[in-house]
View: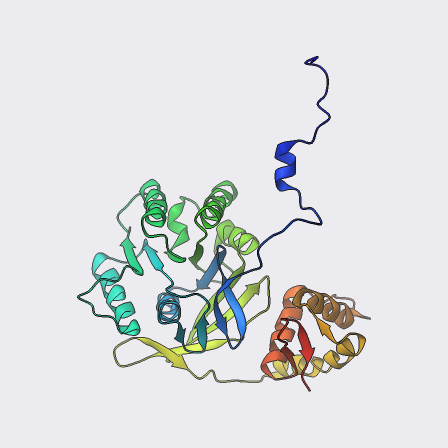
Length: 330
């Protein structure tokens, strides 16, 4: 063949990334459901944010209780015998072991009989290269379903570096795909606002499937799902028992003027569902957003539409049907 002759066949590298109309992909499998809504998708990146000492570590203990016990605080595990792993870059060995014992207490396990379903590594004293290597080696060794990475910031030098931030998130995305593991990445928010810290935070929001934020109000810790690619879950809360273990708590519902205005907008769902009986979540978001933007100079964003939909589900205006579409509740 003439070496200058162009190969007319399809480029294998190009075809590797092409989505065809007959391409087949597995449906999203969730590790947990909260009040019937799936959350923490398997094999994906999750963000966990909050200010310093706001309860992020306690949130991870609550999450592990739900995953390892199969049911806790309104959460229900969607897989049997889930295995979990903590990669901790912040706690001292003493504090890390204390957290290990707390997980055992929450699960009702014997502290003298190590469980193969849960492993904890403290890498506070390790360098960045060792932290990354240990993370991947631990995935190979234990084959967990979920990893708590506390925190992602300690896998790079500069969280404001665009290049470093993109590289470490791509590294974690490779791990999620290669080992089919969900990685929950803990990262502080900025001191001045609730945004995730630096370019690293922006990259995590862009590539992550869900992001949760933890805030502290007195003796109660509130958890809000701030970002979600799929159906949103309601806010929830936890407090601490006399042993310092996170336990479910009632979330005080305070309706301020802004909230009241949003709830008035929920009547617009009558119009949306008059056009069609049921919607997939993404279709409902776009249809509701378009309707609410009619005649407005400032168009409604997807995040606002998702928040209104979540409020409508919570207040019983709409609900998820058995086929996972959304319908107007009768």
